[in-house]
Structure formats: structure tokens, C-alpha cells
Image 1 (cartoon, rainbow, N blue to C red):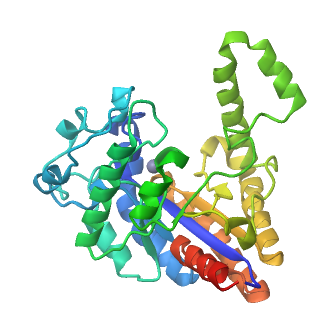
Image 2: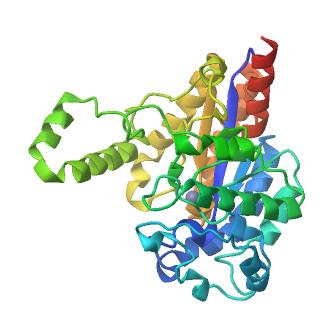
Length: 348
Ligand SMILES: [Zn+2]
């Protein structure tokens, strides 16, 4: 392939993705906002000829609680941290019908995405399943993924890619994915700031951690979080772009994230130009060097400050349009990119 690729993926989950961290009282405005965010995203993507992959939590497909409950798998995740499972009480909080509960159902939004066949509907698992959490098992994950595929099939949607909740990719579960027809997933950036399997590479930080004693693990996590946030504004981890030959040796194909599109933050408004430049520079680098740039976020990140967030996105999409004209930079879904890699691999 003698051009670069632009991949956009969205983790579409409503309350199911955050229910263990925040309440509807705290975060409901962002979640309810998704019902206007998705139509606006579809408009913006249409205007700039961009394709996106919407990784959707299986629960969102249902119209009613009565329809959902019988589809719950027989094997449920037995996380050691019981709060992580939505089956431990959260169903008491959901209403009977999608028209009364904008936080837990989204069948109409899924139908709206389906009207644009250029976009891909992918899975974010049935229940927002955590593949690396202690206590759960591979068989439980398999049942979850089967349920996700089944409800998507009822919408005539074949599932061929997955975005793992909290980006918890478990190498032991690869065969479950391949046996269920998954050909790609979104991996983490390879840099140590994002990849917790890699050691922190900075000497000063290592020294800092060595002083931390028993709190080492917590300190490492805090530093990674801080650096990830800073990385949205200044170049810490590089552009995180990759060539297709970098990707062709894994199956399912790992299409790693290049950058999380963070939401507009009033406290950091002064630094918006830096945040934009960081993304634009990565895209330009990919376009000029025939590499792939993968941008992702959650629709609920745009749920509030919608005007600011969409104005920011429009600048990104305009830049894509420029790169498309100038360098033949191409927007593509995860599955289409995986297919092109797999065909090329087979032929060459
Ligand atoms: Zn998620």
C-alpha cells in the first residue's frame, strides 16, 4: 500500500463503561449527551468522507429490560472485585424501556449508524468485560462474546473486530476471538507510558520510584497517568504511527492506538492549540510516510461542551481532507484495514 491510513475508533458504551467509577448523578449529563453526539458525529464524518469503527457494548442494542435479561449468558464474570460486574446489582438501576432510560440503551443510535454502511459496527463486548481482571475466566469471556455476536446478528451486523474494555488485551484469549471470527483489535501504544508490561525508561523516574518503597506500584500507575495526560499536549511518546508490515505478523491483527482524543477541558483551554497540534502532527507524519494513524475516544467524552469538542474535531477532519488530497491519506475502518493486511500477506 503506497499511502497512509487514518483509523478512527469509538468506544460506544454509555453508562456500562463507567458505572463502576461514577454515578448517573455525577456523569449522567455526559452520557445523555451521547444521543445528540452520535448523529452529529455521523454528519461530520459524512461531510469529510471519513469512515469510523463504532465498538458497541452489547447491552446497548436492547429496547427493553425484558428483552435483555433472557440474553444474559449462563456463565457470568466472577471478578474478584465484585463491583466490576454489572450483574451484581446494576440491573436494579436500569429502567424497563429505552425511551425512559438514555443511560443504558441505544437501539435507535445503532440503527442510525447502520444507515451509513461505510462505518463499521464492532464490539466492545456484551457487558463491558475486563479480560485481565483477577477472578474471571476464559470461558466466561467466550460466553460474553457469543452473546455480543448474537444480539448484533439480530441487527444483521457481522462482528469482525473488537475493542477490549479498558484496553485489557489478554493474550490467552486470542483463540476465543479468532474462533468467533474476530480479525482485528485495538492494541495500546507501544511506548512505556501506555504499555504497562514495559519498564519505565526514564532514569529520573526510576530513581523516584525506587524511593517509593512499598508504594511502588501505585507510584508507577500515577506517573503513567500523569505522563499520558501531558502526552496529549507535548510530545512524550512520539507519533505512535506504524507501517502495515509492522502489523502483518499478528492475528487477530493488532491495530494499535496512536492517540486518545481527550475532551475539551475548560481548565486547560489555554493549551488547546498544543492538543490540536499534537494530533495534526501525528496525522501529517503518517500521511507523508505511508503509515497508519489511529485516533480514538468515547462518544460520551463529547457529551458536554459539545460545541467546543465538535469545533475541535472539525479541525482534525479538515486536516484529514487536506492530507487526503495532498498525500492520498485514506480513511479506513479497522476491519477493512485488517482485511487489506491479510490479503496482502496471503498474496505476498
Ligand atoms: Zn469502554
